[in-house]
Length: 354
Length: 271
Image (cartoon, rainbow over all chains, first blue to last red; front, side, top):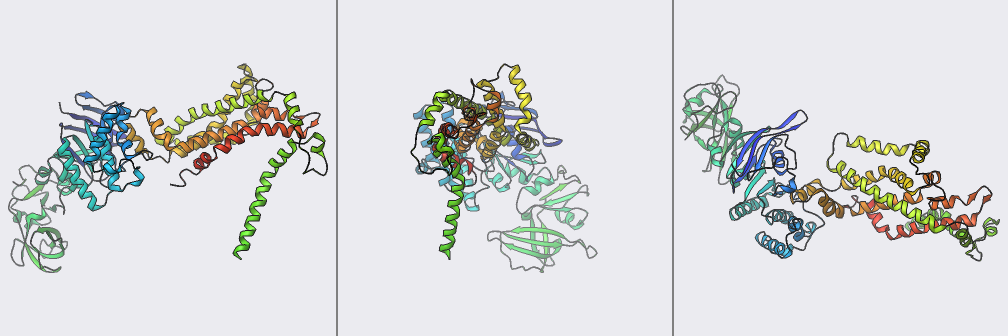
């Protein structure tokens, strides 16, 4: 049995099924990220593991023990909240040692553990302050410190970075990754940001409408998305998804063989921009986004002279470009780089690249 | 111009204050008069103070006995009320349901009925239970009549505590009791103190139920004061002396806890 295991876990809010029978196994030491658009149930699922939201059906095992009905306080899990949820009336040191004091750990051990956690998190000089006197980033670190002094069985993170500004978010993301490497603690991390998911996770769980869409390592999800939703959710800019009937030329360009009806997906980096008149598709530049390292070229491709609605295709390249909106270009697709989905958005087997 | 406005405002403030405090001042003055001086026309502002009325009140009735009844009934009913209201407010503030608002309104609505409307049933119940003229009956009635206010005040105080903090405490291993004593109590100390104090004052000043449900044995200070407006006429000096002795303890308590009270009533307003 795995370290943490969910079997058929469900949550109902009235007649609404918020979580629809989740099966998931998390191994010891693994960093698992729940990702999905807002309202997909990722935070609810995390709260169910934490015991803050009741599990209506299914079972939850931790370390071989059924904890489905166990109170949060007895689960031996630590959680870092989006709002940090620090105790405003306690000093940083007291915040971090609260759990240990409740567990009647002796004072010298507590002091030692708090000291070590403060050292790791660079909080030593703030131990006597109250949360009010700290910056957002420092509060965030105290919240993490409160979790690590306990050495719990599993760390739960509920969108811990969403209240930080962009620069600090990137920096803290790196710190969390480093911390996980050092402590090797089992971690479940919830985010709506697919970049956080890709960079932190050993395994990513993509959720939508209370169901798991796909579970896999970040690159597995990127290279072999199981369906159109995952294909478009993972990766920025989004994968190009084109109705195969709308642009027959793309099928040829991508080298698609087999059943025609469905959607063709191509990652932007698999679209190659050629001079006008060359390439298997002809298009017109709509917009150029120069990001420095990357250049994104949005081109409108018409199916033919008769077609009124052109299809927009994004290309991503490392070289900079002189192209201007309105310029005519040609497009090629890297051979065998396409993903073929059926009408329901499911991957047509055997069509993945690689 | 600015000066004048300030002057007008100051004078107005003093007038209002005097108007509010005048009965109290008059009460204090009358308490130290003889009965004759008390009813003298025109009223005497300057006179030789005497403790005669206090002496007579103490001779005629047992002040300490009534004071003890007041202390016991008000303190016990307040503590009991807090013990009942705090869990109720906790569940309403942190585990809201669709009916929470309705329940709160319903509780408040019970205060809209005049107490006399419930007099007969309450009296009969007290009589049947053999609790007439007992402190127990007063404690039960005081507690129940203050509960709606207590729940409301605690509810609005608790609502200001972010629920995340309680969840964090739960994750840290706190039981419900631990959550309450370690997190809610320190964070809502102002609310708890002001709620307790307000109900203490309300119970202390309660006259309707103590007059109707108690007499010699369980009578509170309110009953003591009332006994001086007798059929033979009012004894203003003695009535004032008794009143002064009745309000003195609660005034002192209020004085010392003023800071807590103000903090509690403005809690949430300043953050």
